[in-house]
Length: 234
Ligand code: UDP
Image 1 (tube, protein in one colour):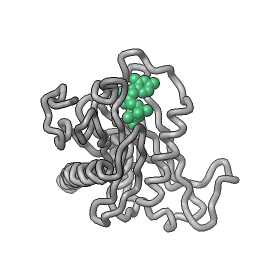
Image 2 (cartoon, protein in one colour):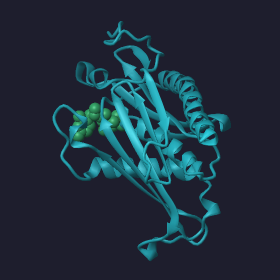
Image 3 (cartoon, helix red, strand yellow):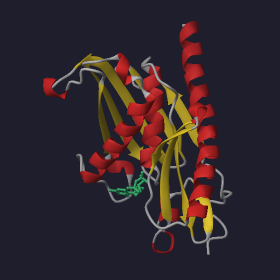
Image 4 (cartoon, protein in one colour):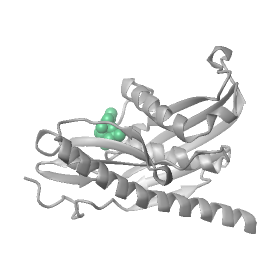
């Protein structure tokens, strides 16, 4: 049984969020997204010439996505460098971003999207995807919509939104469902499942995810508006 959340949140409540755009002066676009004690910074470069050339696609841009967890992002020190988990997450991010960015507008070009996790307390792929999406918008890339991403799941008998690491580890492991949405299109871009869940509960998790993503979406839009209203003043 999991009746009361460790951090006192309601089951459908997101952690505290901070979103900021334009945090890396040398990138074409960038963003920082923080949710509780999970934080990701994304930097976007391009569209540029494809290197190496054989990655080139005649009908669209190629997205090169990198995900990396800083060694100081977790209590145990993450091993520096890219491991299999980092590669899997980069692939997951790339698949989602491919459907959000209008890649068909940049044939034979390459867009580099680098995401660094500075602090990890579960939900890093979701925070990374949200940060990457804001960074792409900041870079001026044409997009079908911003991506809003959050994990949901099941702890004991309770369906919950936005799990912490402590919750993920509760009683030998909760069910974790990372999700991503294109909110204004009503499309799901990412749905992963780690653990067991009934069909009915999965529907409830997705519903919570959708509602959470809508809140994240508003926060992303506010961050972008702040950025562009500051720019027009300077
Ligand atoms: N984690 C860790 N060390 C690692 C990888 C992960 O401490 O090398 C923690 C971290 O808090 C991460 C969580 O485990 O957020 C869950 O990782 P998972 O692979 O499920 O992906 P995420 O939930 O971060 O998208």
